[in-house]
Amino acid sequence: MKKVSSALVSLFFASSLLVAACSKPKQAEVPDVDKDTGGQDMAGEETAPKPEEDAKPAGEGDMKQKCCASCKEALATDRSGTPPDQIPCADFTATLSPWCLEYFRSNPTKASECQ
Image (cartoon, rainbow, N blue to C red):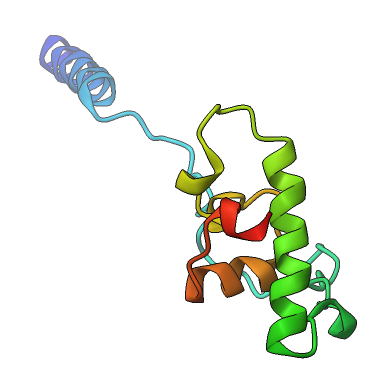
């Protein structure tokens, strides 16, 4: 009887080790970064720069005159070698103000027309 009980104990011990070794390993729980925890936002308030009211020219003639001046300045720095009669002023997006860019998009004008 002693041999049977020691055999059962050793069998039980071996099976428990086998079960523990073959089970899935537990992984650490990773916090969900997309989950909103409702905490206070640490970033400061971002405010968009306000457009200057005086940056927009008043009338249609004044708008064309100011925007053509910007187009001429941009044409002077153009290194593409393309003739001015083939370059739309709206292509100078880096140097034109947003008002002039919108003006040239609604009123297609070639750079040669501003000279």
